[in-house]
Amino acid sequence: MGNERQSAIEHLHWLGIVLFALGVVAVITPVVAGSALVIVIGFILLIAGIVPIVRELRAEASMEKAMGLILGIITALTGIAVIGHPLFGLAFLTLLLVIYFVAEGVSKIVASFRYKPASGWKWLLASGVLSLILGLFIWNQWPVSGMWAVGVLVGINLLGTGLALVTLASTLKSIARDA
Figure: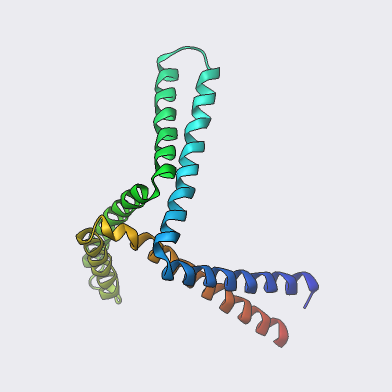
């Protein structure tokens, strides 16, 4: 196996371990993980608001300039509010998750019945029901669920991604040894 390929596999392996460890930390401390994510989103909103403000201030006067400035200011202020009050941002992000899970659940349930004669339609139905139940469970505890839902879901995603990368790296090492 070439040194570059071996090095890439090692990097993949260690990235998987780091992501898995971050996932464990996120699941154990969901409020910290969720708040960190919300702060990152706040900075993204702040930057996404500043860019159009600067662009529109350079543009010639027009109705479009005014709308661009207003939207930029609102976006930047939203970013500042989220950074300044991450728990409020976490509650809002959790509400968006509820909407997503409920919409995804209903969509999968409806789609499953369209595929009903096909093999495996029940898995799509089960996935839809699970998404719907998760959305309703989080909604039932909202806004308190904001303290755990985002961090736990991000943690689970990091755990799964980390495990997948470690497994992939191990498989690639095994294939390279056998070749």
